[in-house]
Length: 176
Image 1 (tube, rainbow, N blue to C red):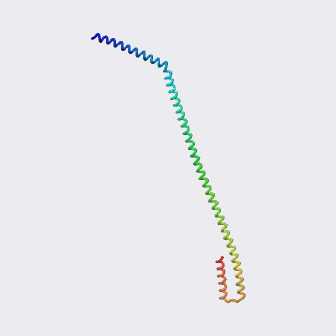
Image 2: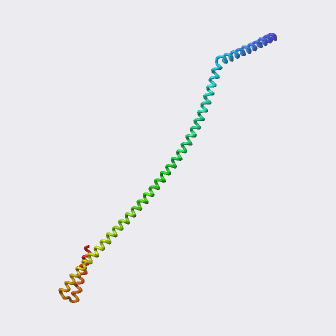
Image 3: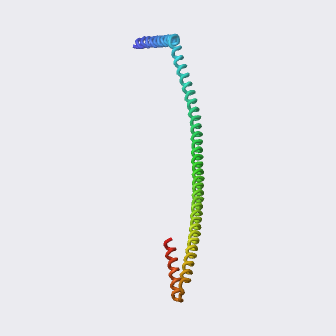
């Protein structure tokens, strides 16, 4: 039995070495075939992939820089737009204030002119009324004097005549 074990152990040892040799030769042959036929394509694919990744990273960095620059431009434009709108609003307020002051000033001037013309008209009408009253008083005085001269009056008739003339003047003034 021991001899069988020895033979089996020797056979198993030679089989293992044979297997190792076969696997090693097959592996070397596989490496040679891969190197000869596929290694160029594999490295080419890896290089292309590495270049694509590098280009994508560069493009992403450029896009980030452009986006950052665009954001700064937008913020600057927005700031300028806000400043412009505030300037426009302030200018509009100033213009409105000036216009309202001009309108108030011209309205006051016009009111003063109207008041002055009305006062002049009132003064003119007063003067005309005084002139008319003077004329009427003079003419009534002449009439009274004429009536007095035409007849001799006693004190009571004289007072009644003066009183009737005054009432006539009051009625005349009320109708004007």
